[in-house]
Length: 612
Image (cartoon, rainbow, N blue to C red; front, side, top):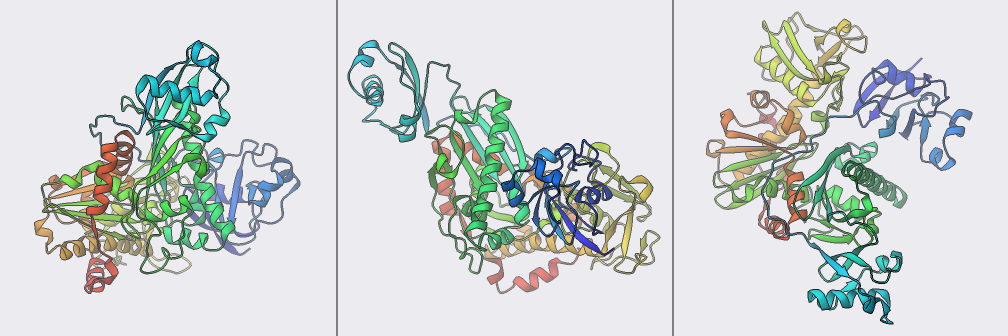
């Protein structure tokens, strides 16, 4: 039976499996039905429970079976949903595992720095005593409410959100209400029931991960925080792939926008449940994301963003009604999106600078927000200069032979001793290893270099006792964990190609750093501080990143890991109009360079591929 490539998302696991078997059998074969992030099949894969739902995003999985037609609606089948225990692999597949079908949760970096800010939210609450005289006045209900606001609080001709006017039941005579006003617009009312505190939602809409924060807009307290995988992963792991998908036609564009909205609504519902409220209580939201995520969410033109010179359709801040995006918030709630800077430097970068206070740095400071797309900013002498580099998905475990995302069973740390003969590893959750995630592969390459198993070019030493050629031929590989210690009944290895993938990723970041310094007339010796942000930046070992040359050769004390600084910036912009304005000022101040147009780019990048 021929072998074909099956790509499981969002866990980032790829494997060559035999065609002719079910998707569930393939998942079991590679360990994705054993640990967190894998498929659940309570009935044992007999088609009796309908719980192993997946979505075939690309490829052929045969015709739906009677069991699938029993558990799945026709429109679901049309969208590619199948039961993993029934769908038979015919050829290469891309399979999306929805959250309800997963056995566990991936490690997601949600928290960042805590930055003190005086709440000054764009929405304000007013207690509105609706007197009998007012109620009996023969005027339309909302005219009465507007009159009360004007009389009691001096609001100048307040308007009422049209959908709110349509949705609100008449108020009881002699009752009272709590009204939420944004500027001069009434966007929500609580009458006849207790009002929760004014609530806002801050979201860091990342290419791979989405972090959300439910905030009390009066006190600034975070009531709930959580994260999900960006469901758009099923349509491409990087921004260029997703832009390409959107350009396939209007139906494709609508679909990739809709899955993002569905994910945001799901995240909002989870946060609201944790806080004991409902998504309809959310009265303001701030969403930050890179330029591609920003455009795809707003359904802006993207053809010009997908090709050089990568021009955004819009760079100014955006305020839009939540309902116009399909978000299930309060009737008149708004969503604010921070301005973007350039084609691949977006509002999330503005939020990162805001959240880590890099705009007020007194030292020569480098800020790195590491992800599938890494943004770098250099703050020096009161100026800021930024760039973007395509570090790729290797740090998420993608394009690594046995790579996976940071879920239970992923090797997250590696240490070698005795010239690489002894291997010590740590897996997430202490489970038998199923694969290796980004921090683990970074550690492994750094350790291979430190112990001399690979040279400066990244080539494995074929004479090393743990280095071998696969039985069927192919590039050399280093034995990391023997089969008897894994959870997948096969050896876990680091291949020559894996090492090359990490070299490419680290070279992108290193060359971006050097070219930014060059554009500013500075050198690495001028750097005084390095701020490392982002999920991967939180979990990586600084020593490993320095060893392979991804980070500048500076003392460890010069580095500061700040977690999800973009999420912090989003919260600040949600809570404070002054911080929102500060973010807009940052976007105007930051200069941008396109790396590939720099004359020295090719030489710098090629030199950065080498290990120092």
